[in-house]
Image (cartoon, rainbow, N blue to C red; front, side, top):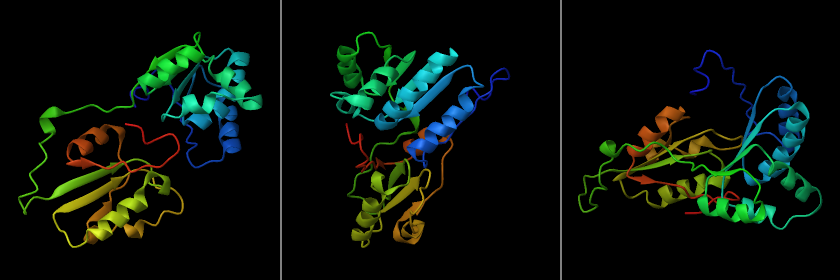
Amino acid sequence: SELTSLSDVDVVVIDTVQSSLLVQIFKLMREIWSVDLVSLHASSSRFIMCGGVLRFFSVFLGIPLIVRVFGGSLYNDINPSSGLKRFLSNSVMKSDCILIEIQKMRDELVRLYPNANLKWFPNSRRYFPDKVEPLPSTKYEQTTLKFGFVSHVRPEKGIYEISRAVELLSDLSNFEVVLHGQVFDGVDLSLFDRKKGIQYGGELHPEEVSEFLSSCDVILLPTWYDGEGYP
């Protein structure tokens, strides 16, 4: 959002979240010819496949490539690898800058690729300590605890487990669950009924995420998405 506010910078955002791998690569290839810098933000599998292809074109066109990988499974996905996967892994690891959100994984990758420009870039949000209240004591029956969820609203993120937990606790009235994030195709939003103690609040603007998290008593992250679930 900071880049888009600059008058001398044009930002082209390509949303590939709900696209197949081939469609993602096609979208990226269609835009790469007209830009001065490419930045890819992806899970470990897309990091290898899309990043490896993008690296080839960025070198050919003389365009810098910055790659950011999410999750904690890249080290296992990239080592050991063979064939095409190994070729693409070696290609993307030569990117101009590689951003890793887990410091330990960054250190492990340095041993595999000592010449790679690997940077630790934690996936964190601004913290507002003055807006965070201590968790209320549960002995006060009038206290309503707020549980918050911010992520992709998709089965792999544990949204149905959250819904089931709320259903099992339906006899209680001292809590509420609020979910925010992009809804994926096939997700049944009727499960998130405010009357049942759970509601979907729509997508948040990046500047709104920290404030929402600060307003919660408990953050929910019951993910079983590949590469996530680390501390």
